Length: 332
Picture (tube, rainbow, N blue to C red):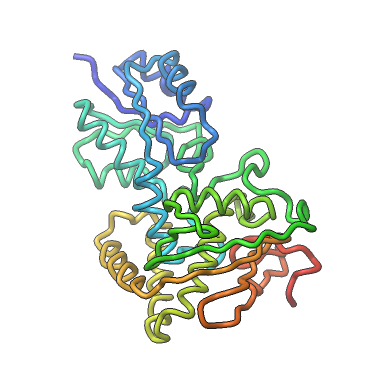
């Protein structure tokens, strides 16, 4: 009997080569996951996978689940690595692992193949210790769908979601984000879903160079950067001081846990519960001005506001949220 294998298939050269190889030995179910990056032609991807030898192609629309069950938690936990940049692959990876395992169970597959490295293998093994895991080398993380999401994306060949910080110097953009118990529910008074809030703010913030992060690798996350900035500021005026202080430690631990590939750790759900409970009073409008690589808070309920992210890192010229400031606006 021919072995059935589920393959994570983002559609790059590496995954195409892997599919060709596996198809000569097994019946391959290719899984293409859509995390909302908006830059992939899913119909073309399906045709490509079929041409590469897939017996079946599953296009998994994970946009809503990713936004509501993963990105929203990261937002409410103000999840920043090194207090600077949002999570990228680490936030989408557990959902991809869950989708691969669910597809394997549904199709009676005996193995899961992927090019996502040890972290993804560990998650699959946690969810389904009986499945064989085929870790395929040679096509690195940037090709995976987890590195291109509506929350953030790895940059491999030039920034695509953000303009240069000086591109629109003469056109500052004022935006009002409304939160209801920690959930972004409106942009400029128009009701939005969590995914829509990320998309709209990402487009507007990206036009002003907000959300670029240059670490060992480069990342774009304009929507995440602005939402986290707004949420942090709203928490600063709605949470009790002791609760806010304690939550900062919980937020940091939550981000570390997810970054380290421990989404399925028994610690995460209790942390989730605390973060969600703390959001009960986090409601109100935050007015921001997007300009020259920074998001400046211009209005909050009951308090005059200050610019977001004025603690610039002189070595990189970036704020803690990774939004490069124009020299004329950079704080000392």
